[in-house]
Length: 167
Image (tube, rainbow, N blue to C red; front, side, top):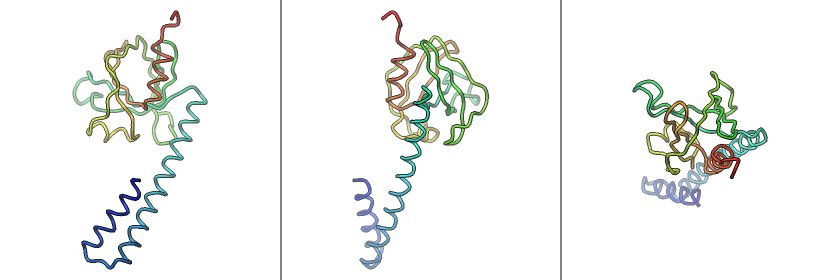
């Protein structure tokens, strides 16, 4: 649907600019084909990454410490891979779409949800490149943390990290 609307918008803009109909149709078709191809490969890469992580029992998430001193880590979303265990998240910072490890891992314990999932703000969306990710604030042994992840990842966190084994 978005591709069709985009195609119509490009045709309309080209027609307003005074281009011939044939040029406007070709231009719109070319750009929408390019957008569709880029979107397909982006989707394919994200599915491949998600499958690889799920086979290892891991998830992709972004982590930040909102109570850190200004100018330090307070506004920085750190992308990484999380290994989930009962009551514990092992966070390994990673870079690039290959999720190459960077830096040392951090063990977060005493995890307790302080908020319900909310949409990323415009400012946060500049740093969290995955669309449809949501943010939840948690209490942990290192203080208040915010995690941005997919709704499915939050479900996995609820089932694995936050559940009490005696329940």
